[in-house]
Length: 351
Image (cartoon, rainbow, N blue to C red; front, top):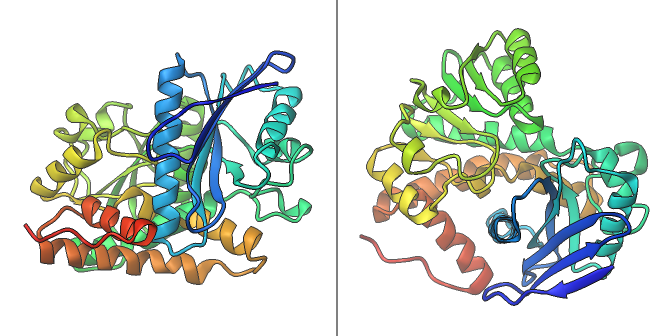
């Protein structure tokens, strides 16, 4: 196993691991451990090159620092990525090798599941390291965090409805869910239970059909969904869904979803959403439910994470109030609040 260090400003540590015997090629990025050990999921994706993988892991790790800080958790931010197609390249040997890589950091980084990794995969990784969260409940872990992430998004959407539409219920509210993977599907189920009208899209045609049939949802193409007239647009797939092209196609009142790094250019696109009068729920605020559940169940060893998850509503309400008061986009307010906790910076001036 060959581990090399990459120097990057702002980051405490970035390591690239190559293990020819197992086929593992992976990166672990630790952004900040000021508040506690870094926590972040493992993502497996067929990255075309090192630069794209490094860009992704750095954005995700930084977002985890901000997410934990904004949720008032004693955790830092980190992330890891594995190069490869999870449907073809994943093997027990590769996963165990990833466990050894994580273990080499001696607890500075705690792993969890992300895109391309399942709770069963985590169990295999845990054969080589104890620094794994979200393990199956029969192994004493908190289980798949997807439901809790989705539940947090639902609570955050209530804050958005109160702010934008002066209501808290979902009956008749049209929600476009872009991506019905683990979290997107869990969110769509909860929205259906709340009597929302759901539009769905996904590259996985089988999962898309199953979701539409089960929840009586309308199906749109992967590009069409961005221009669907709706009350809430919920990005629940890979990051960067809101970019120069898609943003101008949006016909929603609220942007609130579970994906990490939803805005391809956070500063620019946060400003554009603000001026377009689309209420944006900053992604690392609204999607913190899974991390909160892991922190309460796996780190604190307590059972009930709902009090913390319900505070997502309060956190967003505060952000929206400050946004109106200072005439600053919610995305910038969220960053200012997180940075005040992480680095002791004060909130920016009013515009």
